[in-house]
Image 1 (cartoon, protein in one colour):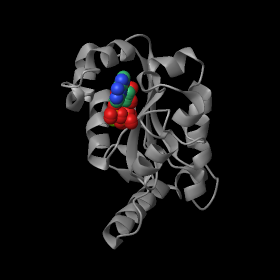
Image 2 (image 1 turned 180 degrees about the vertical axis):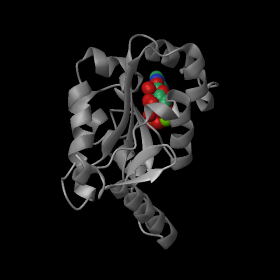
Image 3 (image 1 turned 30 degrees about the vertical axis):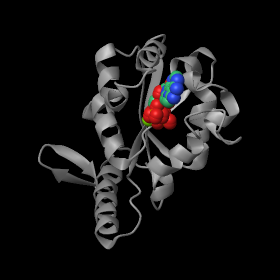
Length: 189
Ligand SMILES: Nc1ncnc2c1ncn2[C@@H]1O[C@H](COP(=O)(O)OP(=O)(O)OP(=O)(O)O)[C@@H](O)[C@H]1O
Ligand SMILES: Nc1ccn([C@@H]2O[C@H](COP(=O)(O)OP(=O)(O)O)[C@@H](O)[C@H]2O)c(=O)n1
Ligand SMILES: [Mg+2]
């Protein structure tokens, strides 16, 4: 027990923190200050009610995992009008706004936070054009939908937008900062 814990862990005030975690934080800090890729960029992806109804949740999650992104938050919920009016505040004056809110409240959503290098822009590419009629085959919207009013997923469209949306939909305590084994030197836990 002792030999397993002591070489790998250090005391920090009340808690034991894995040394490996401290090292990883230091590496991320170094990457940030050196201008190297930010592997901790995060985005909000939501599977809309039509995606849930059509049992597409697994396939959509699979695409993000397969691409190499890391899931750090996930929940299923019924969206409130209040959250949606904040989420889509830029669209409040659009003629389709009311139908958009009806659509988004018509059933449960699966809301997720994904993390990884350039995840905001790459997710937008993976999701495809807002209008599925113009979305490329191979994208989520291009493969699973045909009309803009039922376009299956939401993806944040900028890093700043993603930060706001993540704060809107998630509490910090519900996002897990877990270590990916492929970013550590051994699989020893
Ligand atoms: N003309 C339209 N008719 C019906 N619904 C629309 C129309 N335009 C947009 N929407 C709906 O509003 C959503 C938000 O539009 P927006 O312009 O933000 O597209 P988006 O950024 O691709 O989508 P999202 O923000 O949901 O990821 C669209 O995803 C779609 O569901
Ligand atoms: N003409 C449009 C444009 C958007 N929308 C809906 O509004 C959502 C948000 O629009 P948006 O411009 O932020 O596009 P995305 O970010 O979703 O690609 C879209 O995903 C659609 O669901 C619509 O119903 N009709
Ligand atoms: Mg949008």
